[in-house]
Length: 355
Ligand SMILES: *[C@@H]1O[C@H](CO)[C@@H](O)[C@H](O)[C@H]1NC(C)=O
Ligand SMILES: *[C@@H]1O[C@H](CO)[C@@H](O)[C@H](O)[C@H]1NC(C)=O
Ligand SMILES: *[C@@H]1O[C@H](CO)[C@@H](O)[C@H](O)[C@H]1NC(C)=O
Ligand SMILES: *[C@@H]1O[C@H](CO)[C@@H](O)[C@H](O)[C@H]1NC(C)=O
Ligand SMILES: *[C@@H]1O[C@H](CO)[C@@H](O)[C@H](O)[C@H]1NC(C)=O
Ligand SMILES: *[C@@H]1O[C@H](CO)[C@@H](O)[C@H](O)[C@H]1NC(C)=O
Ligand SMILES: *[C@@H]1O[C@H](CO)[C@@H](O)[C@H](O)[C@H]1NC(C)=O
Image 1: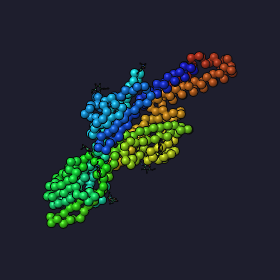
Image 2: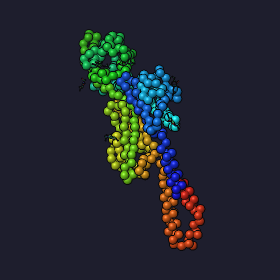
Image 3: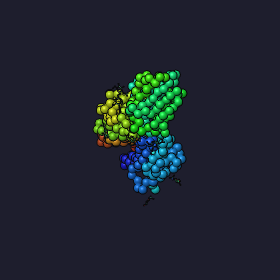
Image 4: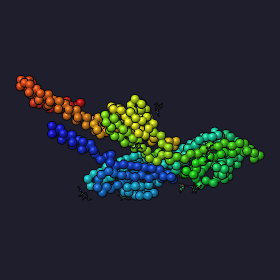
């Protein structure tokens, strides 16, 4: 018995391997830069190092910090597999995350009056202002009654945000780069005929949202094997949550609290599978998957650990059942005991482990 418990303690000890103790959190800053923080749990004098797509981060990619800082700021348009490694003299753990640039590109059809357009903070929006076939001699684009674009005979005349915008007369698209919250507001397009008479106006509303940059899932066991799962996101304006289990939407039958749009849910007993939390807003969508977890004992156990612990528990309970029976039978009769040779202990335990 001591051996079984000892083995269990060792396996549980191993299963608390420090992989989950590194946390990467990223957020987009207003100009499309990304701040990333690496934090580690436990461990004295941790030393940090960063790689991008397998090689050390270079100063050209960094706006602040260096390849050994805890917190760094990546320049605009830097993307790839970012890894933070934390080492001290007794351990080495790392966390990797695919980061995409904060400069999200969006498209909006502004040819409909009252169009609602979304742009990402630090990103780029392409607004289709006119039909490519439209032969409009002159038109202006105004923002809150300030003229920002004046186009005459398809020549680009005037643009107050010229340093970060482009107009393509050939296809009628207006592009604004490096979006800031100031760019949100009401825009109106005013076409004129060749005599300078207004042909009415169209308006569009531009909303600027910070994109969602990362998603975190945390689970805990409640009594009776229920599992509470919280999904939280970093960086996004008006995040909307949704959940899937093994690829399909969570149903109310699987939930004892929350619904498929809550950020915190409680799964009923015995509900398990690959759980995915998606967080979206109008300019981005990020999701995070949690491997199969179970609350059959009081802590959430996920992935391979679940298999190991459950097999051990089954093994132990079979051992105790057998031992109890053995004792009862020992008291009953010596003749019956002869039918249970000593090596049946091994047999039963092996059967338990293979379950
Ligand atoms: C960080 O970069 C410097 C050179 O810029 C290099 O000498 C050093 O080894 C790097 N550190 C790590 C942990 O990769
Ligand atoms: C780890 O390093 C610390 C000092 O940084 C030292 O006191 C400690 O003995 C070292 N431990 C091992 C196992 O080398
Ligand atoms: C983006 O805009 C900010 C001011 O809003 C400016 O400081 C920054 O240099 C701009 N970046 C680029 C790449 O144009
Ligand atoms: C936003 O607008 C305000 C005033 O309208 C101005 O003071 C500020 O500099 C602007 N910020 C950016 C990033 O353009
Ligand atoms: C933009 O227009 C909408 C309705 O068309 C209005 O509700 C909103 O207040 C306007 N926003 C600004 C900044 O003027
Ligand atoms: C959430 O569940 C409701 C029914 O309970 C369903 O109508 C809706 O489509 C689901 N939402 C998502 C995002 O799947
Ligand atoms: C979700 O749970 C987190 C902590 O687990 C808590 O801070 C947050 O307020 C909860 N949100 C809601 C809407 O209940």
